[in-house]
Image (cartoon, rainbow, N blue to C red):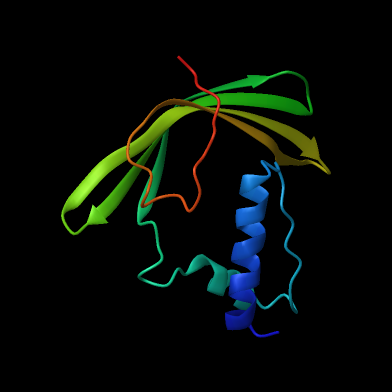
Length: 133
C-alpha cells in the first residue's frame, strides 16, 4: 500500500480511536523511511480543520521516580474563514507519564471541557465530553 492509499486508512483508524475514546493508537508502517508519517501529517487543503491547540499553566507532579502527572489548560483556536480566528473549545487536560527504559513516555490523557462554541467545522461527529467547572 502506498502512502497516499494508506492516508485514508490511517485517518479512519484515528477517527475510530477518538470515537471509542481509546487512550492509545499504534500505527505500524513501512520501512522506517518516514514517507507515511510525513503523508499523514499533511491534510488536504479543503479537509483540514485549520486549528491550533494552545496549552497553558502546566502543573507537573512527580509521584515517584517513574511516574508523573500533569494538569494543563487547553484552548483550541480555529480559522473558519480567511481572517476569522475564534476559540471553539477550552478545558483541562489531565495527563499521566511513566519512565520506561529511562525515557519519559506519555501514558494517558483525560480531557474535561470548560466551554465550547461552534464545533461543526472542527469535528466530524458530535462529541459527548465530561464538563469541568
